Amino acid sequence: MALPDWMVTLAVAASFFCFFCLFVRYRRTTSAFCRKLFSWIMARTEKPLFRIAYTLYTRTRLGYMYYKRQMRKARENYPAGHSTTHPMEFNGVKIIPISVLSDNYSYLVIDTASSVAVAVDPADPQKVQTVLEEEGVMLEAILCTHKHWDHSGGNKGLKRLHGSCHVYGSAADNIPGLTHALSHRDSVRVGQMHFKALFTPGHTVGHMIYLLDGQAVGAPSSLFSGDLVFLSGCG
Image 1: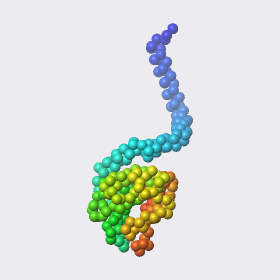
Image 2: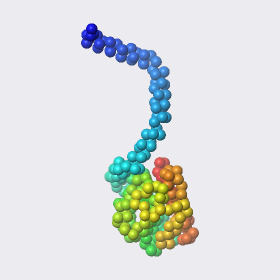
Image 3: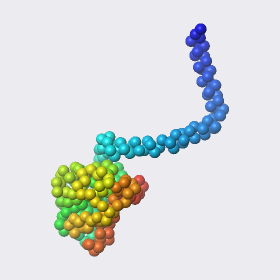
Image 4: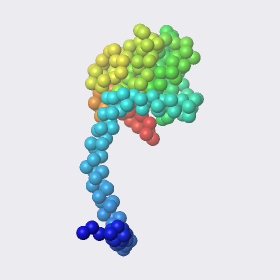
C-alpha cells in the first residue's frame, strides 16, 4: 500500500531536519572531515587533471584559441604594454625588452651596424613587428626557448612577414614554425652577434636558454632564460 504524499513529504522534511541538526551539533568534526575528504580527492586527481589541461593547452586547437584570447585581452587592457621597459645599448648591440600579454616579455636584439635583429620568444607578433618598424631593422632570426604559446605564439606570423627569417629552438619541444633545430651548445650568429644555445629541460622537455656572448663585442654577456627562472610569476 502506497503511503500518502503528505507522509512522504513529512518523512523527507524530518530526515533533512535531523541531518541539519547533526551537522550543527558536530560542525567542527564534519568540517574537518570535509577538508580531509577534499584534500584526499585533490591529492589523487591533481596530477591527472593537470596533465589533461596541459595536453589541451599545448597540443590542441583549444590551447591556441586560449592564447589568442589572452593576447586580445592584453592588447585591450594594456595598449602601451603592461610595464615600462628600457632598452640597453653597448658597443653596437641594442637589446629592447617588449612587454607582451599580461605579464611576459619578448626581446629584440639588434646589431646596429648592419641593422639586423633577433627576436627572442615573440609571443605577440604585432608588438614585435611594431618595434622592428620603429627601429628600421630586418628580422633575421627568432630564438625560441620553448613551445608554450606565451613564448612561441608569434613565430609563424613573423615568419610569414619575414620570409628569410630562421626560427631556432629545440627539436624536442615541438616549437611552432621551427626551421633550424638546435642541440646543447650549438651557436647562432647574426651580424656581429654570437648566441650559444644551452639545453635546460625541466619547464618543458626541450627548454633552451640563449647566451649572447659579450666578448665578441667587448661588452657584458646577456642571458635570455625563458621560463627557466621566474620572477613574480613572469618568466
